[in-house]
Image (cartoon, rainbow, N blue to C red; front, side, top):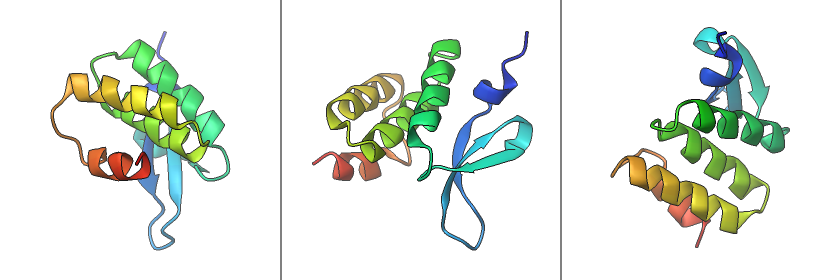
Length: 100
């Protein structure tokens, strides 16, 4: 069974609008504004992390959604999980600043 709607969930920016979105589906075929549904994004990232525990993008995405939800302690734990998987990530500095 293929879990493409979760496996391929990524964060991105709508071109020209600067809106952060959750892209779900093969090649980001469905875009949901993240500001509207951070709890929904969190569910997808948590499931992605469960399915692919070696991919740091999932705990990073979870941390970003948790920051938006004001759940900073949980976001710190998600960031720590990501840092165990990789030393560098494009979103680490952003998350560290948000968690100060």
